[in-house]
Image 1 (cartoon, rainbow, N blue to C red):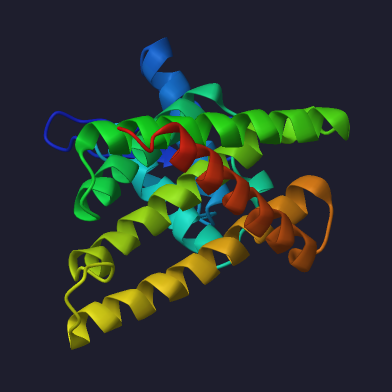
Image 2: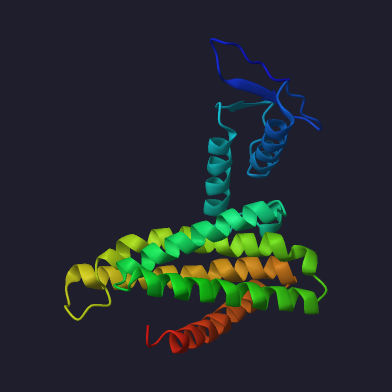
Length: 229
């Protein structure tokens, strides 16, 4: 039951099989989605405290989920199968990819084009594989998990990239940056393998091998397409 007063804008929503709120229908639908995501991210208390803008709660829940996903603690099927959520995460991954490219010394246009090509290639390959294996209903959750984890790891990669680990000038900071980036690449392969093992019902080793093979193919194709940009 929603409790709203003029002096206290905080809303207390009882979490149960059904959520009753004295709010307009669009806001009620948004809050229902937020509560469902929040519940899947590990919050199962009797009450959930919401600010006047439910979007802030959604962002907190998603960040927490993708952090735990990158730590291999959560499976992709814990995400809601939502086209809207996939679009939001895709945009976030694209923006962070552009920032990563700029930090690495690429132009924003090259970073944007390469990011779009990599995302399109990944989504096409994933959709084709899931369809071939008759697991198409898993596409939204798997794609959202891959893009969200990619955005999270890309954000973490920006500080090491700022140390110029790929530059011609050698230094202790550049060596540290290169070491951290290598660790992130390896961990990213494990995260992708973790997601794929749930999507295709395979082992972590098999999922990681697929991740390595796809990364090699994607880098080769994208590099050849945009070598002159």
